[in-house]
Image (cartoon, rainbow, N blue to C red; front, side, top):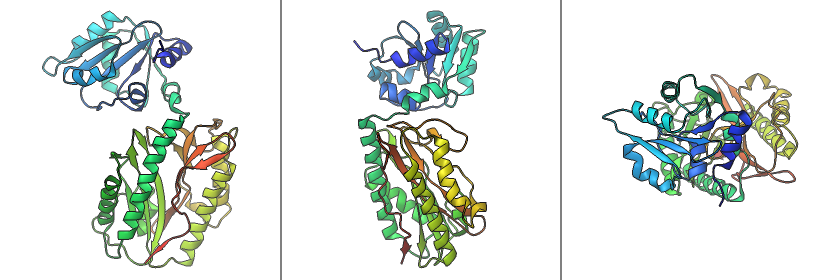
Length: 364
């Protein structure tokens, strides 16, 4: 019988700790195919090097936790009594001197509760190792990503068909959000970025309710739908009515940078190599001072995960990895352009999972 915890036990052995601790989040979902909210109620699963796992679960989640077909002891607690006694009982059941945790996911108060239950506990940040289990996407996971991307692209086309001069950024954001769910999204991957004019020069802008889009504006849409547990992350920049000579030149530069990233991607190159190829295109242009971000990030169950596509990251790319290729140029006070694709590393190169056109688009 297959041990579904084998990978996590091996991480514990490699790091020389007694157990791995998992909390709700993408790694938890990958293992159990069930999600739980991260809120004020701690939920934690301990996977020891050997033997059965154990869990601490809020009482109100017990029936949902049953769906995991969990193999170990479960210690539940109620709001009325708090979780300290349950942590103490879990500690008596599974004495630990050391544990590996998800450093980017575990919250401080859960760490403190563990430190109280296991005095002197050595805590190791194993974010890289635990999340590293998600680096290589299986064919089924790639298919789920493609489902999320296809519906997102359909939603983008729906939205662009409805954009009109005089709408606010908030109006367009609402159209995009409704279109995502109309096309089958289960959730949004993240709060969308809909930014026009000078707002498009802010890489993480928020849509404004008091700005009406006008002719000549750049309109940047960065968004994605989630389907089957996987995220899309797409950016396209279009222009309204007309595009100035400067806008066309900037757009062409970003597009060439994007294509340079595609051209170099294959197994054996590093994340550094990809970012360097993309960045060199923009650095050689008259707009080098408008570079403000790295090229991209991994994509999967989380919208931002490893590998991070940036100079200095010498992680070797391997078949099955998925990342965003999203160069951009941003002139504060004027406009910005970003073009973002979701890219799969294949056995002999790469394949863009994103197929929405990238030629400069001017909406009437």
